[in-house]
Amino acid sequence: MIANLVVGGLAAGCLYAMVGIAIVIVLNITDIANFAQGEMAMLATFFAYWLMDGVGLPWWQAVSLAILFGLVQGIVVQQVVIRPLIGGPVLSAIIATLGLNIVLNSVAGLIWGHQTFTFPSPFAFSPPFLIGGVPVSVDSVVNIAVGLVIIVGMTLFLRFTWTGLGLRAASQNQTVARLMGVSITRSSAMAWGLGGLVGAVAGILAAPSLFLDTNLMSALLIKAFAGGVLGGLNSLIGVFLGCLTLGIAENLAGAYVSPSFADAITFIVIIAVLIMRPEGIFGRVRVRKA
Amino acid sequence: MTAVADINRVAKPLKSRSGAAILVGLCFLLACAAPLGLNGYGLYLVTLTGIFALVALGLNLLTGYAGQISLCHASLFGVGAYATALLTQKAGFSYLVALLVGALFTTAIGAIAAVPALRLKNIYLAIATLGFGVVLQKIIFEWRSLTGGGGGLALNAPSIAGYEIDATGLYYLTLAFLTVGLIGAWNVSRGRTGRALLVIRESEIAAGSLGIHAARYKVTVFAISAFYAAIAGGLFAYLVRYINPESFSVGLSISFLSMVVIGGLGTIGGSVVGAIFYVIVPELLRGIKDAPGLVFGLLLVVVMVFMPQGLWGMLRRLARRS
Image (cartoon, rainbow over all chains, first blue to last red; front, side):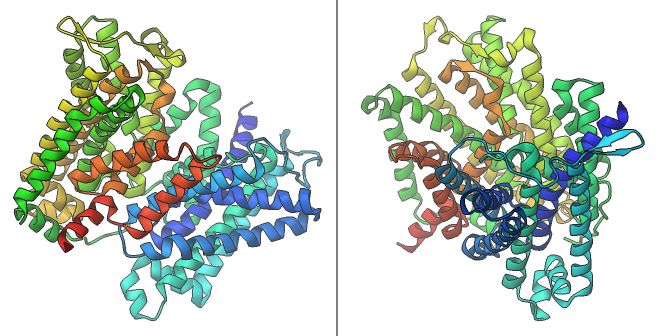
């Protein structure tokens, strides 16, 4: 019983984690909490659906193109909306992403309407794995694997390439990074591109189990923020583990305490954890002078 | 903008003080005369604007001056609405008394919401307050015997001292509270508290070294902004005459925050302008077929991209130039 609940929680937590990673890449480098991340991912997922259903491409090609679309979308959003706001108040940029969120949602509504679509998955008909007698769906295993691959890839990229080093420098101190020849606008564009890319992956992985409509990501977005905060926003692995923990905690609270209070209990736990560890469970405490 | 510039601006009297006074007076007269030229729906919209402006005023003290993000204001607004409604309908209080008692109750809850703020910042604080809001909303929803749960609560017309209050009366009541609220926020922001809040926003360590008790001021400003939200909630309950826990969701909290930012962080007038933008613009767009959300979202983006200091900041710059 409890093992089933944990596995179910992991599956949900993985979806939170994907969105969480996309948010954190942008947040760490540009300080902007991207409220449009969910709708950007939703749009990329719809694009993939259109490629398959309308154009007739096979799954792999459609998904690859959609992920590329996510990357380009992130860069375009950064150039048009965020770039003029670099150096301005952070909250203004956040509200701008909120406006973008509304825009993208209505655009998708205008193009595809508000009905629900079934998004195909190549793993839909595979039999579930049995781990210690507990059935684990192939979807969740794929989600966890993809999440880990993204984290490892991002970590290697940020640690061992010059571009990654520049990005990390920009996230720590923009003035000094600029003095060292790192272009702030370019690293911000790159962060948004990467965020858009990971977001597209998240949308494509979430769509088969949540069904595709214009509100696909709205529930995931807040949960992703909450999970990220719980784990600590300054490390990717912290965000990943935080989101998984959130998924499991929700499932357990729903089953053992009260189904209607599951959300509330989860948030009480998050608040309690944050009061004790303000930087999240896995977050490093950064010493600040100012 | 640095704290020093802000404090200088606050300390220096406006050059064209008489001009500003005349403008404020004109706005007030216009607001007083508004019911004469409006139909029922128009009156509802201006009253709603006034109510949202009250919430935005309180939230601006918290977010604009003290730099603390809150995403639980919709729930505080809801607690104020439910407290007022229950006190009048079930306990038989008079409307004004219920408003004040309900607001004091909500103020206490707002002070509790400040507890996470003592250690958290930015996005962490946003999520913690969001969680607090979800918990409050859930309590209202599940406490069915008291609040009616998801079925909501339908309300009779309110009365003060035996006189039943109609839509026009409620409008003037809102206007009165808004006027008092504006004067109150103006005084708080220009006084000792306002200066302390500005320093806390820039650096808590600097505030501490100046002898400013950051924790105490944070709790105070959370409580003040909860008071504003609760009064607005009490007015809102009787404006719509039907309240439901679903109306006080995270989405509304985010809207309140947007109002403050669109109007202008750390400005009193900006709160009112932001509320006007948020209520009136979607109404004007209602005629456009299919795409009110699209245009409103675009406007939101455009306003932020071209006026990062908000509409009020823009107006002030124009006024200074002329």
